[in-house]
Length: 378
Ligand SMILES: [Zn+2]
Image (cartoon, rainbow, N blue to C red; front, side, top):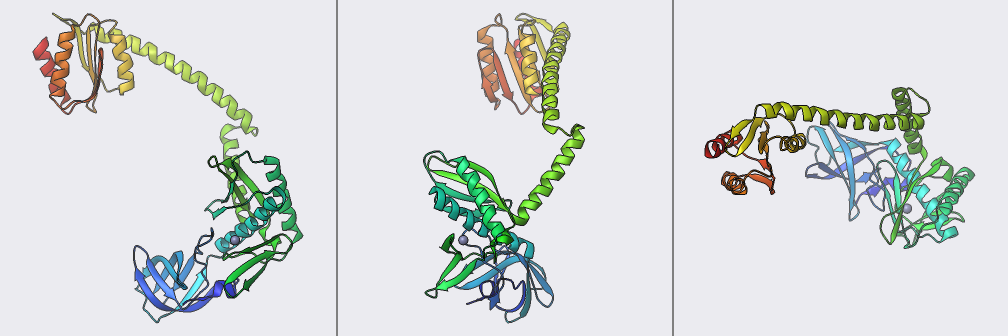
């Protein structure tokens, strides 16, 4: 059994301990006699930090409780630790602080929406960027309720209400915000609601027909997010050359759509011109005018070009460097010959689609096949 320092003294961020057992999986696991690391559970992720020995250091990434034993898994640098060795441990304090703020904010917000609007919280999870809760509700959620619950949460945060934690019947840990909330919970919390700092709902949406999700953020994380958003805003403002980024973005999108139209028109004109030029080099055969040509263009462009070619020749065969090809026949080109083409292609491991007038796909030895087609039919 590991002594749970994270419960006895939640503000102890550094401590010494002794290794009881070692496990080697993808990550190295260390079992200690006591621990300041909160193991994941009840929606709160595990603490992170480092554990150091004589000639090694473990970057702790995951902490798990197994029947009262706390296992610390992480990436090892240096020698292998030894059972019985004395170690030094240190938490990632800022992460611990964030988790405590988010978890305490959840207790407060969930209590308010249940007390005032009968919205029950059934799921809770702290994610890397924000926290989410789930509310079973088949009809629409009332967004104005959520807005006022957000305001009330911030009101209670500013009130600075002490959060009490105590054990009941020796095994039930109770987290209590006097007059607002009382819940059994194993998570780590702040000592006073004012340590949450500030609370903001980010998104409210339906997860499925029975459940709504609310995503929120609080405290230090909210500041970090704001800093990131400010950086993004400054960058966008500079790139757009206009402090009114929404207006500038609209203008830019309009311009883009005009350019796209213009570009499409120009492409069409180029392909028309190209089709005309290519048809000048077509071969006169007994079956009509035929074009066989390698062109390093994508399939979409080759398809458009083929349709343009068929206004000028009876058979068009284009292929590119990637072994892709498109074969098109005009209405005058005999159907029996077309079917023979298909037979030959299929005998040569052809992959793709075929229709009455177009065959499009891929062949391994594409240069070969052009020769075969040519010798066989023209
Ligand atoms: Zn809790």
